[in-house]
Length: 310
Image (cartoon, rainbow, N blue to C red; front, side, top):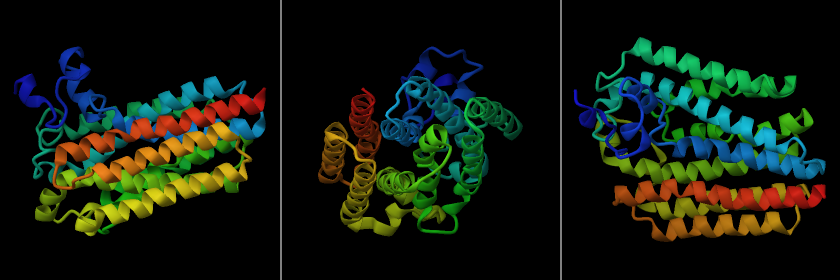
């Protein structure tokens, strides 16, 4: 199989395809290092909570190190999660145009090779996790149950995006666990806001595969909402902004955080206005743009943390 034909269908011309050693490319593709947007979206709630907790503690001395550790941990655990997802979905992926070129269904890697690489990445995540207090370690380990069951949800419920939200938003709890050694109401409300954000953006993402999913019987909120997707996004994105706002209010956030939330809300609104569910390329672009939305909120939270620690 040529390297061109081995590329994943919706990812070409990236650093994995052009710079990585040929032997490493299937492993890097398995863990989505050729498409890092998922790792960034997993990271955003981690960074939000770290910044907000530091602001509440009026202490940013440990924030830079926490940001770096969360970065490494998010990319490692996203990679391990993708490997697990592809192992469980290898038969389904072979039946979908966009995913049949992934390393497992295309034969670039064996299941044993994928499992070994998954374990290696999980161990990196464990090393990162062990840098924190015991409560944070236990909180991080608890997320593995959700990660383990998520790939199976699309087979049994129309709401797999909820389970993805539970997993991808877990970082909203971790910043508080690391900073305070506990999870309080503010953390739980931030977690809820992040979950509704994930449901929204992953619904947009799932519209890329709606037709194939219907043929093979895979469920999603994209198929559930269908022509009513815009209204559903207004609901879920609106809830995300409202719940994150409640978390800010409960933490006595200052104006930079509110400015960041306003920019975040404006970005989400623009996604809803621009969305056409019958345009897969646009759905992918809008999905990826949530990295920018998350960074806008993060900028406000970081400024608030620095202001309160001064």
